[in-house]
Image 1: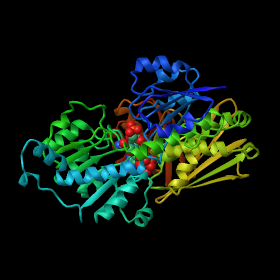
Image 2: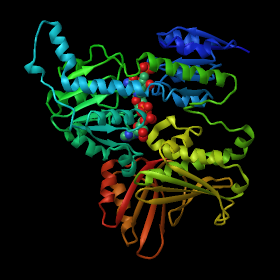
Image 3: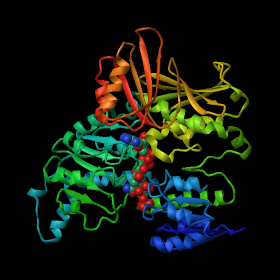
Image 4: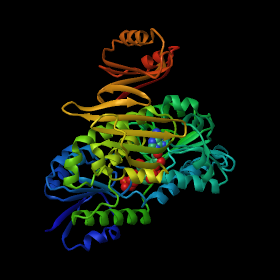
Length: 528
Ligand SMILES: NC(=O)c1ccc[n+]([C@@H]2O[C@H](COP(=O)([O-])OP(=O)(O)OC[C@H]3O[C@@H](n4cnc5c(N)ncnc54)[C@H](O)[C@@H]3O)[C@@H](O)[C@H]2O)c1
Ligand SMILES: O=C(O)[C@H](O)COP(=O)(O)O
């Protein structure tokens, strides 16, 4: 059996050695194809390798009946339709470590260039202008660098900034005060970072949660002397808002390696003297390109030969037999994870998952992975899957504990997911009702009966007459119809919970109005 691997973007020739040495693999190296050409070529290939340039859309995945694996020679997988790949059983792998150092070094180069106006001064010099006064810069020493996203690259940048004797403050949903202390950085919220930093650098993936996280409101929080660096992904900054913030002198400068639309030829931001830019060069070093091409090539050889993926982004490796036994529980286990993680405040530290009833006889590990995936996806996005969920949790010091118990509370099967953060512990239990599908049967200490689907509103309140009516009225004012409502309480007049299924999601203003009710302690509006 022989396989065809299509290379869609420019890759290091040396890095492709593992593929070229494989006798059963034919390498077709045609970087820079237009989508139409790619659509034609994918028809007969078993694997694709891309960088950030080539977009692998659903259309491409669906036009490739033999496609088994998509290799991303780099980190960000936002140019690949992961859902389409997963749906079609195509494994997506990336190279998460190979370009970390290069991206961090490029960030530092941008930081220093921004501080000392190096590109602007050089441009003037090329026009025979010996400008010194207008090109006065600032020192980095004793300035504060704010890092948003303290993962692989963010952490390397922090190390280097400390070497420049900068103060570092960081925000990452997985960062605790203790971890920050160990790394020698200050721990802050996004707001703290935006308000206090002299330089702000972004190192999060691009996903729903981070798209335009740096918007008009964010720029308003920054110091007028603040400068922002983006070597992560275009789209994390709202570019129109950045343009206005620079023109209106709300901030002092920006260094951009990435843009919402690339190539960013003729972009209006490039007309501003306060902006310096590079054409997505963060990973463009000889070393990084060789590393990522080797990593992804090795993984593709393994996978095509039926081996395990080393850096999978989207797959679950469960045997068919186990899958058959567990299949009915997969939706329930993921929904429980999604549900409870959306209700819990603080930095995640521990996940306890308890299986009871007939589940004690099953191999439940794949369900645990599925639940952990549901929990971690809230912050890490769709690159977290059943395969990499444990690894992602482990990397962040999150403990996962799976137990079989006899406490089935009378149900034939019961899954309880308990989340511990640095602020609170919350739990949810669910069961699969014969013929009726998944149900949430307990939230914290309250018994409920809720279908884990659609638009849910969860309200923690004080058990007082009229509270339920007031919530109903506030929803009615916003033309929101209540489909189901469950109320639970521990004792009369004490703490209670309402879980409502509504016909459309709540606007923020409506959530705020409910949370301002004197009886209400906490409101969450979520979609499952
Ligand atoms: N310019 C380039 O050439 C280049 C090179 C490499 C990577 N990148 C980009 O950089 C990104 C980060 O790479 P990495 O290797 O450090 O990834 P990583 O997964 O190691 O780190 C990403 C971090 O972002 C955090 N995060 C998620 N949501 C967040 C939020 N809302 N606020 C703050 N932090 C959040 C995550 O918890 C994680 O710690 C990649 O996704 C990629 O898009 C760009
Ligand atoms: O996500 C990444 O790894 C970087 O953005 C690098 O992208 P590139 O492979 O197109 O250089």
